[in-house]
Every structure is written in C-alpha cells, then in structure tokens.
Length: 34
Image (tube, rainbow, N blue to C red; front, side, top):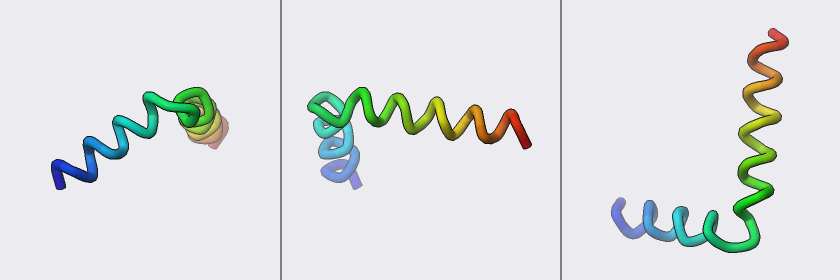
C-alpha cells in the first residue's frame, strides 16, 4: 500500500504531472456540468 502510494507520487512528479492535473480538471468540470 505504501509502495503503491510512493510510486503514484513519483509518477506524478515526472512527465505525467501535467496530464494528471488536466485529468482532474476535466473530471471536476464534468461533475459541475451534471
């Protein structure tokens, strides 16, 4: 569990950081439009 969380955090600190941000922005926008 701890390793998985560390891996996820490490991944977001890399190239996937901005794509992750955009994913959450799109997710919340979709929630607001419902």
